Image (cartoon, rainbow, N blue to C red; front, side):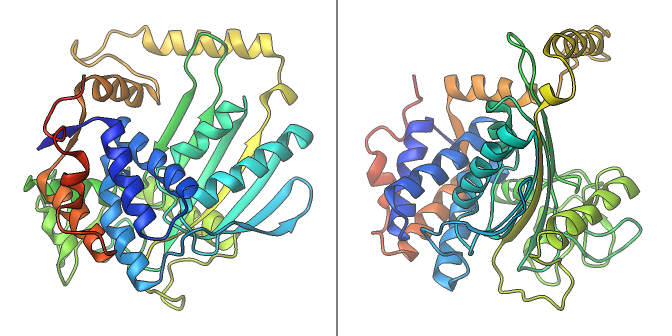
Length: 364
């Protein structure tokens, strides 16, 4: 396990993405998104995704330098097509348009279809929070085989279909941001465990026979196993609405097998953005939200080493720790990133050479 500063990982990601054909601006947007995910503790959506992106570029399922196309504009309702561009880039632009519209209307429903992997969905919640708006996001995943078994099922029928909820907080308090997969664990976290050679909780995984297992390798061989849903039937229901809201209402399609699967990642997202000031007075929001958070955190923790946290706090704690100590990257993931760059024409060992001689130094 090596530790890198965010600046080092940004440099590596930028070099690789530009080698894949991205403009400097696009490579910067995507790299910032990926490395921020690492800083916040979401390694499943960080730079470990780069090898998959390289394969997608090679297969033609990911197209650099795309702009989202506005397909529908009905005032407070907007629909965009991402044209298989980097989801982090087209998603950012679509959100910018939706936020600007919300300033005028107070409420916007926006869909984004046909985007390559949009990454950590909390990023789009953060965009809304930056404007002082609340938001709701439902996402589905198509273009590849399913990964998650429905409740009481043995075989996968969904992907991890994330849900994100964001609520701005008054000055002096951190915003509240819930960003979760509807599976008990994201596939990227299984990949991280597999690369480290570590077992996982047996409640997270089913093998190809539908039996519980702690072996993450079941998700990376044929026949493939499946992830399980969070909260059993509750996560199953949320995953279904990821298909209905994200896939169906966007026009991007659901994971049913009649739709094309080219082995890439296509995300479709429904976003609802609202201006809280159109519903309640700012003074009420400030006092009531503050009192609620204080009340929740006033309980004695069941474990003194684990205080009660509000959604978004674990990420902020991780950000502080990893900024100080560096971002851990396992050797397998680091080697895969190097091989991904080689697939795009970079020389062997390019990523080590790019950081030499500082790649093994702990960041200050």
